[in-house]
Image (cartoon, rainbow, N blue to C red; front, side):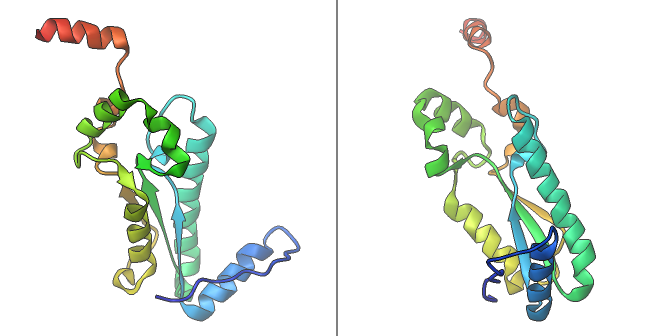
Amino acid sequence: MKPTVKLPEKRAGKHSGKQAAHAALRESSGAICAVASASAELVAGGLTGYSSSKAALVMLTKQMAYEWGPDGIRANAVSPGITHSRSTEAQWEDEELVRYRTERLPLRRLGRSQDIAQAVAFLVGPRSSYVTGENLAVDGGLRHIAMEYVRPPDDYLTKLKRTNA
């Protein structure tokens, strides 16, 4: 795997960081992997800013793949789904909700930071040397069952239990 590109500390001008990254990556035939989110493609209440920014990141990655590809630079993204990490710890305090969500994911478990790291390592490594402009879902199948994954209102669950009893 190629070393990480270190950008200059001080940058003047709007595009100098992009230009510095491009120059360093061109010289090393490097690769970029952005970390987006399943939220880039799935609608969820209260996440307008987050989801929109992740969708923009996916498109930026595709543009970079197109524009920088002729210079030997690959650009890809990973889109994690529900991942158990320190930053999402508060979501997992409701054990009933965790069980509800986990049981619906095709892989029947939450994602882990290592799952994302392994996908990033693949996308920047030599085994993906002919992959560029892609957004790899690392979501345990979440995007395929999104409607089932959303927790129904409690009154619906109660009615459902009575119907199936």
